[in-house]
Structure formats: structure tokens, C-alpha cells
Image (cartoon, rainbow, N blue to C red; front, side, top):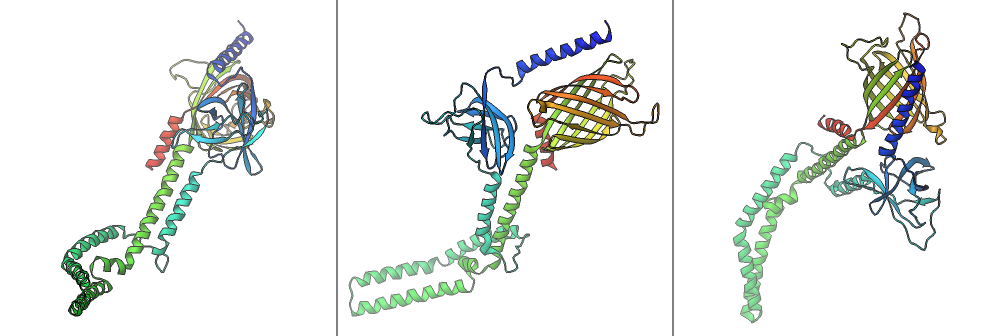
Length: 438
């Protein structure tokens, strides 16, 4: 069997395998569908390819998210047998506090017109977590504003002292009430005598009543005098100027803690990780090569890649001219339809790019031009760096096929390959927890 026949069989088997995988595991639909456009002021982190449900039943998925004016336009596909009316409501909901988000639709009323392919509806904007936190913080600030000192600063180190003062206040209040218990009893007894005497008013009774009122007044004066001097629990509450500032500082610490918690949740939920595996076939040397690594997205437009090229057992004998088990560590960034990256590539310094030249048109937007350059200091056997040029086609979000010419200045061998990119949310969650520990 010659090389061309082997290459053809390999490509055929690869295509058949991918088609079977797409049908069994992929989001491949044989039934008819139509598209709707939904406008939101804020999509609140709705992911690409999110599910579309009615009453919890999946009836479609998000196809594309784009910006139209100052609105977010979400294009979704709906199963052809599901009829949506023009007064339907669309909202973004979550399966939990930090769970995955999906688009919830209602069918609408039967007397309203049925939406057609390409029609537009306005979605119900979700409640922003950031907005809720901001409103709560503003309310807390309004509550604590009267406790702010003249300089606008708070006493940050006195929270423990404030708690101690509060304990002292309660103890003092208990002691004070006990100490003044006899005075309060006398006031109540005198007032009771006064009301009883009023029922049988006479000249003598009037004198007794006046005397009782005088006694009540004198005792109330004594209590008010203690309050004015700052004695007792009520006196301390009225005269302690630092207590208000301590309470203000406690609310400030609560606000800072809330902000830190929001940052930590962001680290846990925003990180994405993808396992990246490629199987390359070199027709010139009749060899299969394996590349594997992990791609980490700390945010949507930036990634880190760590992996190994041409994975092989060093003890095995081979005629492969490409060095085995070479390390890759790349940093990349997305610029719309283009992707630039650089770093350690096959054990040497390297750079590369991937560009979708027809990114505005479906399905041609799936075609990608790939160019890599590395080993810039190579002097033997030629005085030029190693370059790889090729094309790859996106079959699905996680599956690609491609072909490239490797090192045209010297080897000039053609490789065909399959590339699988599998998202792993568990690794992303672990990395988020590492950030939390830090």
C-alpha cells in the first residue's frame, strides 16, 4: 500500500469517525428550525450556546450574541414545531446562585401573531448583582452618614473597643436600673396616691396632691440631672461621641468585605479551561504525532496554553526527525476574528496567529488560517526559522480538522490533523478556589 492510499484511508476514517461523533454526541439537529432575535440592555453573563427553554423544557439554543447599537442582540434557534407568539416574554435565569444561565421563553397568547424566522422581540432585562450590591451599599452609607466625624474619617481600629463598650453599656444599664429601682417605685407609689386622692378632692386632699406632685418633680429632676452629667446607661448613650464613629466603621468593614466577596466569586465563575488534543499525520515520514495541553481563559479575550508536542516514549526507537516531548507555554489574546499568541513553542521562542478571513459569513466563518514561526536562531541545516502554514476547519465548537505545510524551507512535509478542544468546568472551579485561597 503506497503513501497516498494510506493518507486517503486515514482522512476517510477520520471524517467518518467525526461524523459519527457529531451525530451521537454533538448538538446536531436533523429537524427544521427557525431563528429569533432578542434584544437586552444587559445579558448578565449569558454564555454562548446557552439553552433556550419553555417551562423547563429545552426547545432551542443561543446561536450568536452581538452588539446592536447600545443593546445586546441574542440570536436563538427554535425547533420548527414550537410556535412563539409576538407577546412572548424572554428572560435570563440561572440554575442556582452561581449556576449556568439559560434563556427562558414563554409561548405568549394564542390570539397574538406567530413570530416568523428573523423576527425581533424585546427581552426582560435581568436584575444585575452589581446593581443590587451598589444599592445596598448606598443605603448603608445613608444610614451611617450621621455617624461620620468632623474630619470625614472613621476610627478603623476600635471595633473591638466598640463591642467592649456595648457590653459595658448593658452592664451599666442593668446596674443603673437596679440602683434606681427604689426611686421608680416611689414615683409610681406617689402617682398612685395622687390619683386616688383626686377622687375625693377636699382642701386637705389638695394639699396632699400638691405635695405628691412636688415629690414626683424632685425625683424626675434627679434622674434628668444624672442623664445630663453622663451618669448611667442613658447618659452614656447620649454623651459618647465615639460610639457613632465606631458603628460607622463597622458598616464600612461590612462594605469592604462584600466587595472582596464579589471579586472572589468573579474569579471562580469567569475562568474557563479547555483540554486541547491534536493527532497529526505526517505523510512524508508515515508517522502519527500526538500533542496535548490545557488552555486557560482568565477572561474571554485572553488565554494561557501549557502543553507538550510530539508526545512519545523516549525508550522507543523511531525515525521521527521532529524532537519528542517538547514543552509549550504560550500567552495569547483575541482581537475579533484574529488570535495572536507567543512564548515557548516546541522548546524555543515562537509566535503565531490564527485568522478567520471570512468571519462575517456563515458557514465560511468556520475556516481559519494558521501560521506559526519558531526556532528563530536556527543555523543548520538552513539559516531560516521553522515556519508552519495551514488551514483548519471548525466542524463543531470542540472539533476541528486541518492541514499544514511544516518547515517549507527545509522539510516541506504536509501534515493533516484532527484537533479536539473539550471544556472542563471542574478545572476552572479548582483554579478559582486557588485564587480564593490566595
